Amino acid sequence: MDWIRIVLVEPAGPLNVGSVARVMKNFGLGQLVLVNPQCDPLGPEALQMAVHGRDLLTQAQRVESLPAALEGCHRAIATSGRDRLIPLPLGTPRQMLPWLLEPGPGSGSGPGSRSNAPPQSAALIFGREDSGLTNGELHYAQRLVQVPSCDTYTSLNLAQAVAVCCYELRCLALDTPSGGQSPQDPLPPVVPPLQSDRPQSDRPLDTAPGITDHGGNQTASLTDLERYYGKLEQVLLTIGYLYPHTATRRMEKFRRLYGRMQLSPQELAMLQGILRQTEWALGSKLGATNSPGPLP
Image (cartoon, rainbow, N blue to C red; front, side):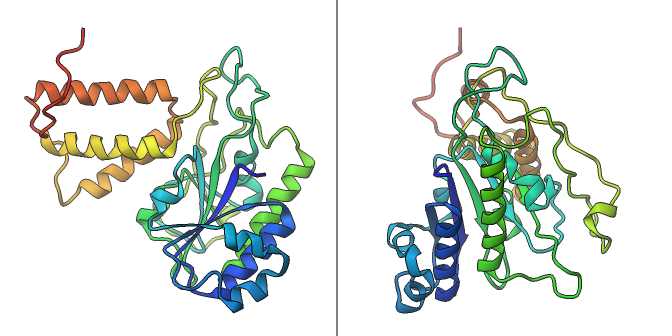
């Protein structure tokens, strides 16, 4: 499972970081990315807990931001320890993680066709020990995972949460070597707009449609999508569709929309071309002095 990276956002406990490296080694995951770590991942406590997973600590990538941690990824799942007002597909590790093991789109003959291509680069994101991930950080993912813990004590230790997910990934890899659920399978339910104390299985949720592979096209990378979102926000602010005080919330809706669509690079390039042409038609109001002329 060398295509899956485990991303820890601002981990504060060296014992946790070391334990994460150990369980990753136990279950066959080798990519660890630390976003702005608040502890020394190579300190004695971390190394002591890592045991035979010390090489993962020494090779771990350190970055300053979550977008940097997702560089090169096409799929991302974020973990959440509590209900959020974010309408993204939400499920247990067993429901959601098969998506990370699906074969990447290859040379299929049409929508829904199976591919022998390897899975696409993916990330599983874990938040801070004390506060988890912010709502803004959750929107960098396309799906959410929540470990179904007991109502009397729902909070899991960071390393425990990573261990649960790594175990599920290992079981999936052993049981389904060709990948997880098929692209035609429906997604788990989408998070409702209101919080509820009822168990996840009892909630009257809508289901999202399954994801197709665009007839063999590769899906656009998360990095390219982030560039597009930034340009889209600029253009929409310029034409007055967005206002500065509401732009963030509106852009979250666009993220969810495009996340469901799973754009191919060709489709994303088409949308980027529309933005470039819009800038030109507006008289290059964004200061893009080298923008192209009208398209033929």
